[in-house]
Image 1 (tube, helix red, strand yellow):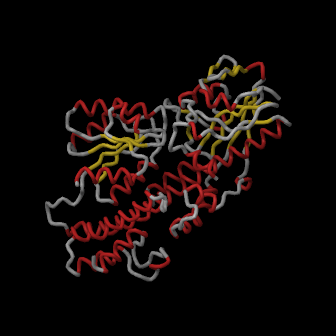
Image 2: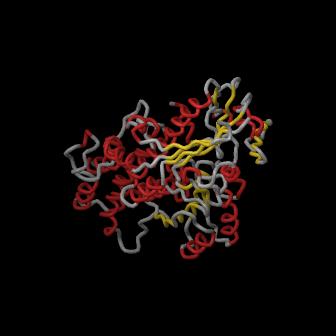
Image 3: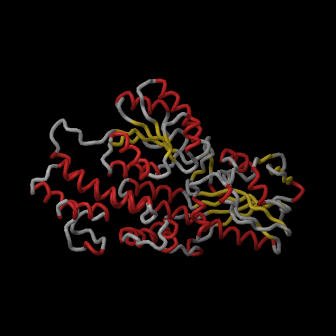
Amino acid sequence: MSDLLFNLSECVEYGKINSDTQYPKHLIGKKGTVELTEEALNCGFSPEVILADALIMGMKRIGEKFAQGKAFIPNLLIASKAMNAASTILKPHFQKGSDYHKGKIIMGTVKGDLHDIGKNIVKMVLEGNGWQVIDLGVDTSKEKFIESLNENKESHIGLSALLTTTMLNMEDIVNSIKLLNYGTKIFVGGAPLSSDFANKIGADGYFPDPHSFVNYLDSLIN
Amino acid sequence: MMNDYFTFLPPISEFHLTEQNIISVLGYKNVEIPEAVKQGLKSLLPTALNNAVIKCGFKIFESKDIIITKETLLIKAVELKIDKIIALHLKHADTVAIFAATIGSEFDQYISELKNKDILDSYLADTIGSELVENVGDWLEIKLKNIIGNKNISNRLSPGYCGWKVSEQHKLFSLLPPDFCGISLNDSALMKPIKSISGIIGIGENLKRLDYQCKICSLEHCYKRNRVKD
């Protein structure tokens, strides 16, 4: 990997957005993801290479630290913010018709539940890792999920709930979506949930954190 | 005293939440804390605390009004299906107090506004809110102890934890005066304001205060696990 791409990946990993960003300490005064992404483009690196070898690489490293208990949710958010800043610059440079996103995920907190911090974190990390998220917000009805899926048939679905009462609403949503026979994969998350619960309601997976969810989604396309 | 309810409006100065408290709850122990988190908390914590409007209280029931079995707690005509773990906490309780506490709808609004600006800030503010309302619960326990004298009290035991279904919130709140501390429930038993807590506390001369039984609880990703570790 070139020094430039390595430096860019490091800026993503530590969340250094631009030269004004005053963290991390060892990168103060240096260029951030915004400047380095522009520089990489000017040097002739393709957007695909910048995305894969620098931006995704930085997200991967912070994700590995998270899995090892050396980083926590704020680290993922900080890195995702830097990644998204770089992605904004990169986006217009992808060839027309090329598949910039890895795929789409329709996400929402289920009916009756107003908690969204967990969903928003997962959304941010997914986007930071190259997935497109259609966010349906909180208190989302079954009909709203189906309507969105009909408009985006190739999407996966992520259901979120924080209450043991509202997580029960997931089963009806899962059953209704499976009846459409689109082959949609449905994933669930939220504090009171478990893999057992996901299996019981016919969902395709439960993930306790955004990193493990991203890893699984990436494995579906690799 | 018994069957009376008590409500309090403690000023924020009663609570001494520090950046270090929040950093610890976020999980940072013996690992590098990102500067963005340190800087974020430094600016957010004072503002967040200014947006808290704290209300809390409890109602103590008479011993004759309660019956505790291995899985249930009967208070007057209301049967709470508290399950085995919580029943264990209430062993030797002569009576119980039902409590509720909130840091107010203003705090919900504050978090909501941050969501549209910065995801990290909104996450930090959400964590501050969760920790503050637990601190209010700690404060409330001291008030309860002052009132009951030499008796012992259990940990705070809440619907949604330790096998007690969150849907039982409706029964719990039916035992409190309407609109207690300004907290309301939706059909899903979600409390509004969102940063609110509720539950029961066992009271008894021979009651032993047990730690939360996280090792035997199936709620693997429970917020209380992080707090108990501290």
